[in-house]
Image (cartoon, one colour):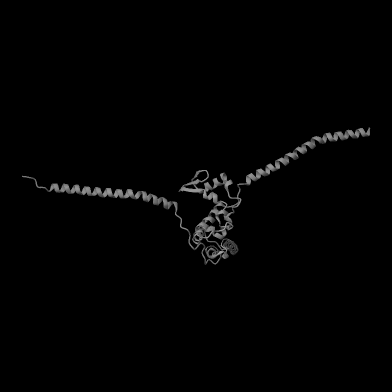
Length: 273
């Protein structure tokens, strides 16, 4: 009897545990299957979240293009792709090259031809619609070298002068000198040596609290603004009209003078008796 009652208890225990075990197994299976799904979803949500300031990256590239590249082109020097200043290392370079400023209040996306009134809306469009075209595999954040290149002068040219921070100035100078050493090694020839010295004078020497050396003092590339181009085209179009009006006006004056002269001469003729 004891054996039979013990076997009954075992059967009852297994019967009670069976649903729980199957439920637990199913929950475990669901958790294992859903965890990768959640991770994948989280990855998909974070794919286009890039922690790199587009505005400061654009300012850094504009400074490179205006205050450095004219001298690099003059020396006919090829910057190594390993250099942080190389355009291929700009995370947003491809998107910036597909940005077209058609008119004063018209910006156009080079990927889908959509138009925007302001550049900031086109930037937001790139983030929402074309984030998959970012150079995330090889590109780096140009904003990281903004301190060395004096980006604040371009972003806020009228910024009120604040008290100089010696630690920040020393940190930016060190970054600036490391860029000069990596991009223009002095052992690569006369051109690299001259550009190395120029980079130090143009960017690095101003990272000090003495205020003696001004940044970006060696000149820059002259850019033709859209306003200047528009005004020039309008002037060229209006000049023929202006000269035509002057010509017709003078011709009308001459014709009127001739008519008055003819009338006056006819009035002076003596009447026959």
